[in-house]
Length: 269
Image (cartoon, rainbow, N blue to C red):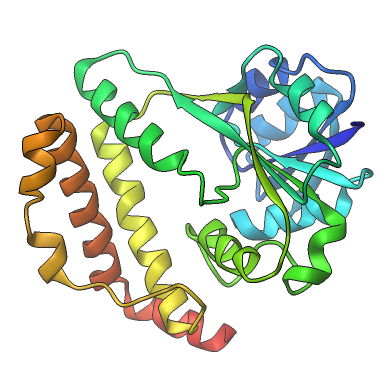
């Protein structure tokens, strides 16, 4: 039990102000990492009066690593600017400090339309898989770093850096737990925005394959194009069909990742 730092990377998302307003626990200290921020975001963070860092270039993994290094506490919780903390969630995390190397919370998704509800149900099912260490919300004891290679997120990756973290943690002997009371609420997602993210996850996965990282396997059109008839029959057909579209978008991102991105990753490896 104890104090911890909440790292919030942001570039141009003004919703970071709403995120900061959801803090209701004195032991949770916000640290906003502005990566190539807009002037509006700079001014908002200055008005909030919280600790902040500024990076000259955009990049989620680099921003998270900077926040990790800049934190004044042994434990760090990662948060997104488009999420807010459910009342009492930060207190639950404060009570969980020191109980495991990684303490993963739960994300729920708002929805205002029928289509957004389908997206929310899909996201809740996949985002909260107990075997995955998705970085929001994820409480990390920094003393675990030597066990997992000395770093948390690989700056060479984009969009799938938490998958890489999960693979390294599985073989490290680090301890993990799920904190059901550690709930954050994500803004509603439209199908277009969500499927665009799936495409980017596919691009990020291709980067992991290029780098030869553990757990990253080649993706084929054959499996992506096969309709999940079993799931459609036994599950909500609309949800099963949407998950199929998500998988198609992921595969397209993997297959169509640009040559320039490939060269960039090759240069970094």
